[in-house]
Length: 265
Image 1 (spheres, rainbow, N blue to C red):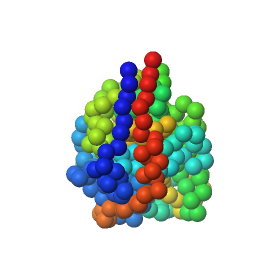
Image 2: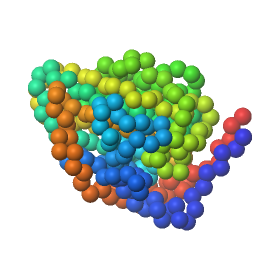
Image 3: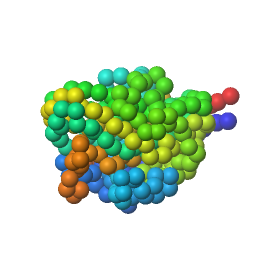
Image 4: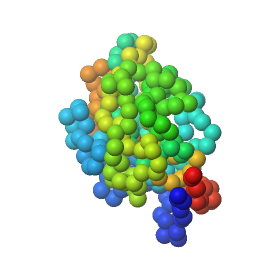
């Protein structure tokens, strides 16, 4: 079976700029948060239902319109990442032994042989890594997707403790990919909870990322919601700010080159 991928003129023009907001229906990122690539806020659609915390809105990162090199896990990535996005919260303050809690739902249309991945990590006020909370990656064979194979183990406590992939990839934030599936392993994780006890008092950032691996096709993304430290929401205002623009003209040449025909047995 052959998988044919190409980039037409209209797509090339559209890919000159990545807008933090993804689809036309999506909203901008929360006030004070920052994005590199494509990120935004959305409401329940497809396999991403309303968040378990009772809110109607979630934030997300997606490889759709991601930037070249974006979304790579900086301290423990693999070789072969192509494009993706990151989303970073505003700076927040934690007391010693405060619990950092949030929900996530990983969705991927890419399966065996082209295993995309997502992650979350805690950073100090100087953007040094404190902990890799979890990684999620498309499995080439049946099994858990968290932690992502060949990626670090989760340092957070996850609920459920065993997270596999569920059928279904229909989600607006995947651009032209919703509902598609390349080979085995694509689907969604469903909403899961991450909880991490911060040992030392201080100021921190929470950062999320998602990346394509091995090519630029068949997109993946992650929805996140309910982030709070102790009983305090990390985004207490809930007021969005204008979408962030990220130019990546240099990455366009790499994109065109990376779009290619795949062959499988």
